[in-house]
Image (cartoon, rainbow, N blue to C red):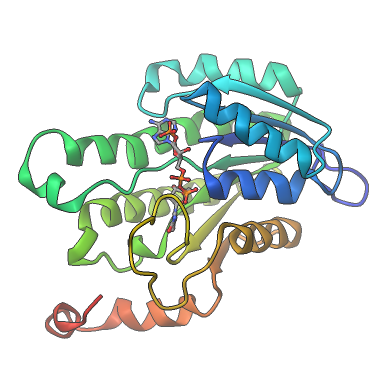
Length: 253
Ligand SMILES: NC(=O)c1ccc[n+]([C@@H]2O[C@H](COP(=O)([O-])OP(=O)(O)OC[C@H]3O[C@@H](n4cnc5c(N)ncnc54)[C@H](OP(=O)(O)O)[C@@H]3O)[C@@H](O)[C@H]2O)c1
């Protein structure tokens, strides 16, 4: 439970080696020597992430196996995670795959794998985690959405559609938790320079995992429900959202 000053004392990161997830854990944990649980598929990557979070000032870091696609395991996983920490002030949904749009359009199971991770897996574990937060009577579920879901682009409509789906789901989940003490924070970053976007030309207003982490920590502290990173993208995408389709198709986005 947050301390008397509102500082976060326990954090669960799903997709525990994600650059943005680790940056958020480091940002939150260093403030109060918090307990952090990093959950993901690759133990070596989680160990490296754990070292980073400890170096940032966390009091204790544990790692757990977690696969977003294995939805049958989510209930048991959550029981294990909660038994390690008692409760969580913050749960971060940081896993995700960008995938390859051309491969997804070409056939095979590539598009379905992207949806299974970014939408089905995220929805499954969000429901499980939100039941735990509701039972605690406190805690914030941080959902890493994206501007890609705000107006889905032809260039990455498979990924974008999964983000549109999970963003809408998270909005409704937040509404369902109103009054319970638990809440949802939707984070909508633009292009974040890092592993997921390696080799791509940075989009205008590109940001960093550290900036996303700072904005997320401030939004949690302020009890906000949505944060755009950088904030100006909110206005850019409000305009994009309402552009007539023939015009939208001609934009080099
Ligand atoms: N980078 C950007 O430009 C950007 C912009 C907007 C939103 N976002 C969103 O922000 C979140 C974090 O992105 P990031 O930049 O930190 O990317 P990242 O460093 O590539 O991290 C993504 C993480 O997801 C994990 N993952 C993938 N599939 C998984 C599965 N089935 N089960 C469990 N973990 C799985 C990966 O772990 P493995 O090692 O197991 O693959 C990896 O640690 C994602 O949801 C992403 O869509 C990113």
